[in-house]
Image 1 (cartoon, rainbow, N blue to C red):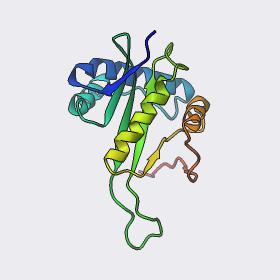
Image 2: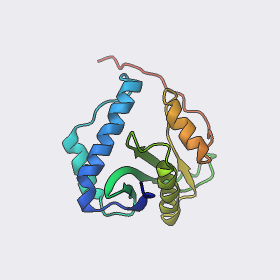
Image 3: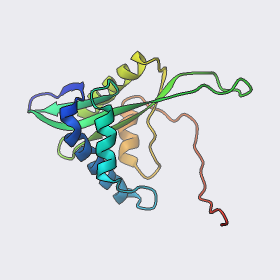
Image 4: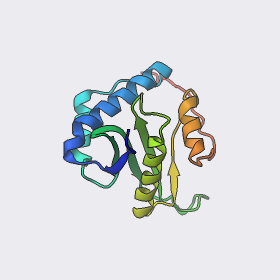
Amino acid sequence: MQGPLIRRAGRGDVSALVRLRLANAARHVELDPGLFRMPDPEAVRRHFEAFAGHALITVAEVDGEVVGMAEVVLLHGNPPDHQILVPRRAADVHTVVLDGYRGRGIGAALVAEAERVAAAHGASLVHANVFATNDRAAAFYSRSGYRPHGTLLSKDIHADG
């Protein structure tokens, strides 16, 4: 296996991007079916058709096959002036590498490129949102230097109808 080619996703990558998103979704549904779902493949296709070719989606290619991707989602808006948070441009990063290609540095290369992309778009903080049930993802991002940044607490509530 040659090293991964890390490049911007193009329109010709849409089918591979859909395959990656659906493989990632299936893995997450196995972790926690009450939290994750399989998205509609056509909705995923429309999303990637709209964004492929933009600088925010990067792919990893090995021997001519797209085997991983990273998507940067820029977070807009600073906290209002009455809040205490220091204004910072932030971004979320979402990474997936196909089974069989993990443990070869592909994910780390994708994360490094996603960080460059985020910084080029003015972000100074990158979030990798990992749910507590996903130990493998938490360990992966930790190896890339990501650390806890607060705690997100949530509670399921049901509105009375």
